[in-house]
Image (tube, rainbow, N blue to C red; front, side, top):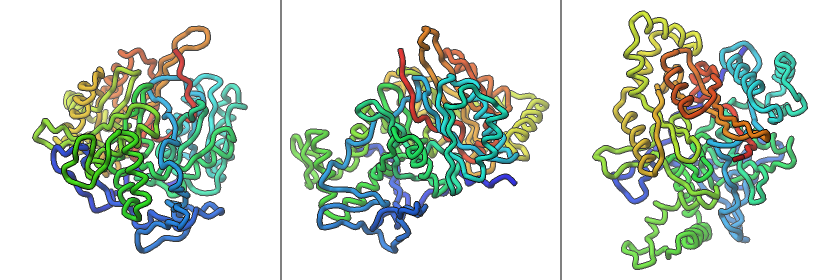
Length: 502
């Protein structure tokens, strides 16, 4: 019997407060934090999935001790030490050779399980023969995975590691960890705070990988509220969706209200980063900044400090337009892809709607039938997708991201995009992909993309043509069924190590 997966996109917490048009930080929403955010003790040694260690509280309160420390979600925050600057350089999406990839596996013959197996087979066949694989699976699925690997019979079997866990985990390996490199250039995994929780046990995945690989530490980073799907990077710049800037700011503000010690640490960090003195007055003097403006501009400084690159916040409001723009999708990797250091791909709903609209009635019916077979959805799927993607705000938000990237000096190409909304429909994205771009030791060039496909050849081929025009060898990956759960191939794996070569 196949498992019932949990949707990747739950309802947003309330209340949501929108900023006014054109405010300083261009941060469009502030999302309230759950009342059980703060913990009075670390997570239990038994590995409780409760992020508060089994001690949920009716009121939001931190446990600040006399020695200047507090616990946040079971992690000790020592206020005698720097709050930030202990993370690492985020692994690039746009360049490099994948050295180590983490993947889920699901037994059975359900659509999700079958498409996951096809994806794994694709990776095992097309990645370099020395690429390491870490499969984190439920113990009950371990034998099925071993049997599947015997069937595929990949080369260099000793590079493949199966890591069993004793609790249910979702397939969304991207969101609960941020792989990076330490100052010494060694892989590390940051376990950040999460916004969307497909499974409370998902933090077990990075911990299990670290336990199986002693040279790859897993480091709690509870002050960062950045889902893995909302952060992407080329070799120069890390791109982060504005919602994560919001949510990180909201967390830091909430902590600052618990006591002056934390607030003072935040102010000291900001002053050191910006060479501006933070003041409580509404009209700051020369070399000063108001406390309100500090909060509005704090998150990018935190991200630059933590991720060791320039940071660009994407999905912000454009103050030059009369409309209000915001992040177009819950995770930006569903609609945005950096290619090299000078090019980005941005989702375009109107492009997909135009392609579907040009189909003949006979071809439209056939495409619906093909999409039903690959996704498991029923009815007039294309009509529903077009309905969900025809909101002018969605198009406006995607176009705003494209304009912003052009202003930053990037070449921008557009890709078809049809949003599924909250319906059980495929989420047609060609941005949520896995890229490699490197040179082998013999000098041969490798440039390939593992690209989601959906069975509608007109949409698939239009997207493949964009990547091929940029020099990529396209490796199609069947994803329609998996995307009904609101994620695609980038969401359902994570890159633990990636070597950048010339």
